[in-house]
Length: 287
Image 1 (cartoon, rainbow, N blue to C red):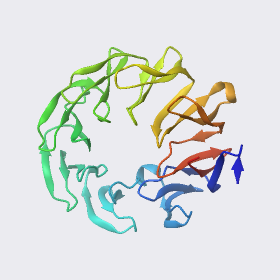
Image 2: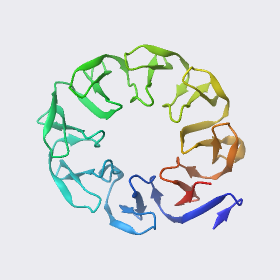
Image 3: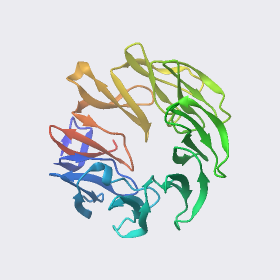
Image 4: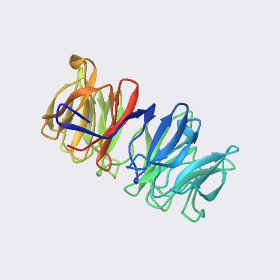
């Protein structure tokens, strides 16, 4: 089926909720259970998870699973490959995954061996060789470590983001800017809201509207959208109040490629994007 001659559903709206495809699989909800489908809309892992928090997306061929309050990992067939023994855990990224065991944070490799031990309150996934850490719940300040466990950017930011394309989003005095991997501000805090850099651009909010900047901090797409998302596969989602509160897609030149027509839309991943029309969700292919 198609809409406006430029949108093709490869998986028609039929699910109650969906997430984007990752490593060939996507989480979908049927009635009150979550499971995984492939790109042919066939269930690879039948709906069985009660909550989205217990049905994570795959990363590097593994997804964490909670069994009797302990966290382990299963593979894309649903088989447990790392027994549940951690108090908490995150996704595998760059070969490592953050875990908490006996109130101690660290990282394991894919054989479940602890390769980094830390004395921090929280540690995140590695991105571009660095990972976020929190030093204290009272201060709620975060910094970054490298893969040896050494702190390379001291905790000083409130809820910064992971590094993407060499820059990380930080918030200082209620404004958003960007730092490099030395911790230096490259784009001064000046935006009311902002996103990660993807494909060379990042969305930013100026006054009441969203536009996009390049890595020099220059506006390449003027603020004009009521809401906007990251670029992926050359397109970004935008939301328009003036178009009956619908979602559509723009190109990196700011041109509307898919007119606002969805009640929900996610970014393109692996050639497909999750969208909703009414109360049912499906997937469209890249135009």
